[in-house]
Length: 188
Image (cartoon, rainbow, N blue to C red):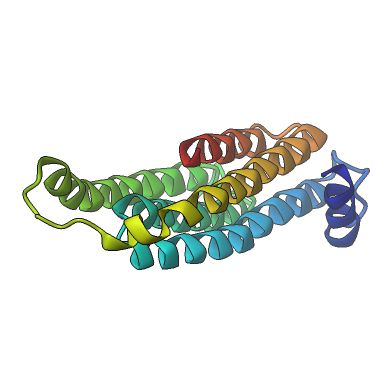
């Protein structure tokens, strides 16, 4: 894992040892965000495909959550850019609140997603829908190793984010690492 991280840092962060420089710090955050975005696109697409194939609400909901993680990385990129903007006439104290607003948008998105998936899951649980996913019986045995791979990938993302966060003393990246880790544990 350390070799992959070192390779990515050398490839995508200019002057990586100068962690007190704001441009270098931004490079580290950008690297973490884009790695999360690409990883979550791939992971979410595979989860969504398997969820549809097996009829599993849990996998489909997990795919939506994974796509939500991608959106959170995009919001972090945008809010970081806005928050770094210099003060202007409308915002004499700067744009630091942009990150908080982005967080509120993400929270609302996650709540809406949870409600949308909770309803059909509850119906299945109490037997109101009468639907039994046939794909789970046929493909369930394949899902266990695949889910273990998903767990391993999300755990790698957690360690990657934590490593970058420690390098630049970023609570945001270390927090994102904990988010990746909780996703990994939820997958298990």
